[in-house]
Amino acid sequence: MNERELAYSIVQFSPHPERFEFVNVGVLVFDGRRGKVISKHSSDFSRVKKFFGEASPSFLKMALADFSEQIEYEFRKRHFEMSATDFNSKRAGIFQITQILPALGESPHDVAQLLFSELVEANAKKKKTERVSTRLTCALKDAGVLPLLQKRPKAVRISKWGVSIKADYGYQNGVYNLIDSARFDSSERGLAEAGKRVLEGKALAETLDHRLIVVGDFGDQMDSFVSDLKEEFLRADSRLYTLNEVDLLAEEIRRTAH
Image (cartoon, rainbow, N blue to C red; front, side, top):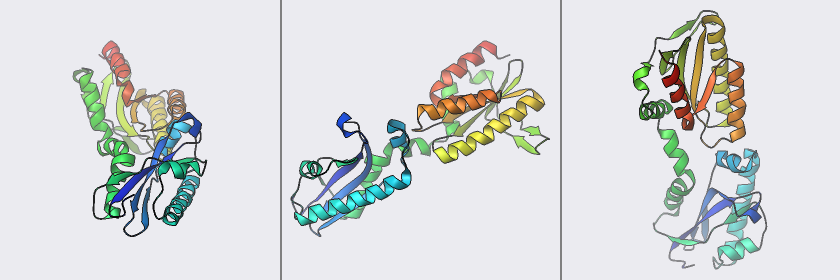
């Protein structure tokens, strides 16, 4: 490694490295000029859960911090004359580093932040910056059913609870259907949102003979998480779709709306 240049590597996670399936969870920037390694770690492990099942965020955070300390120790001991292959061969664990490549920039911290945003956070950020309601509208428009829907129907009052339920769209097919969008892309927030929506759907069905339909952004949640929530919605006489399933909802609208 040229000590006059910065270099970087990606930290990858896998509980089964022998399968060659990894998720990017961090970035390292090697600053040979100052003898430092700058580390940026992920705090969102939803993609880890998506690919490998349940994982403890607190454990992964501690394990990543320990891994970074070992990297800095080993590279400083070798005066930064070590390859990724050499480092990975010395340890068999849940983390590995990718090939070390040159990086352009003066500030190692700025380079680390930029690379982290591009290589670890990029997909999640793009999805979160766009409102779910906007994506739902685009999907319904592409499916050709917007003319069959009432936009922003009047809020439905649930006197029993003293609340009003708003929705993005509505349509009649024997019962009045409220179609709304929601985020379920983090487990904790997703469960809280789901609990609220299930209760709303149950109240609408029992008191007003309305049906609640929710189209959700699930991000990198596991398929089992989605299917479990769908079952809860069905038990409350409501429906849950993912954004990728809007075509199924559109087909029902075309077939039954009047």
